[in-house]
Amino acid sequence: MDKDDTDFREWDSMYAIKDEKCPFCNSKSTLITRNNMAIAFEDKFPVTKNHTLVTPIRHVSSFFELGSFEYNA
Image 1 (cartoon, rainbow, N blue to C red):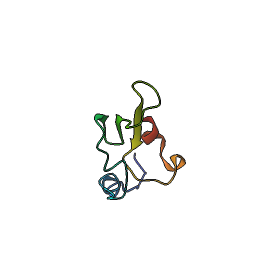
Image 2 (image 1 turned 45 degrees about the vertical axis):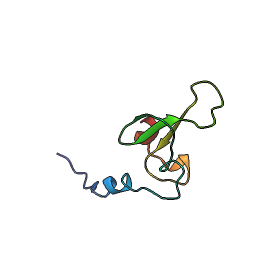
Image 3 (image 1 turned 90 degrees about the vertical axis):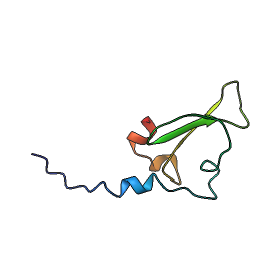
Image 4 (image 1 turned 90 degrees about the horizontal axis):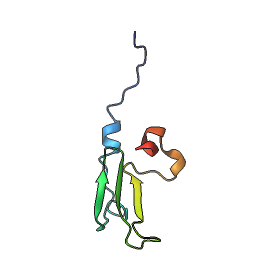
């Protein structure tokens, strides 16, 4: 029997927020791939050939605020 009463309905809205000041939300770089948790695109200033930028879709202040499902995505 499932006894977890966590309400995940508000989580959808956390991934739908687009911030006009966010450089990743407004990137003009070429999209490589995306899923529900993360987005990958070409870096405008690559350090090496094929350098790819991967960012979470949810806005957080620090990498350490991400859940394991997000950094695995």
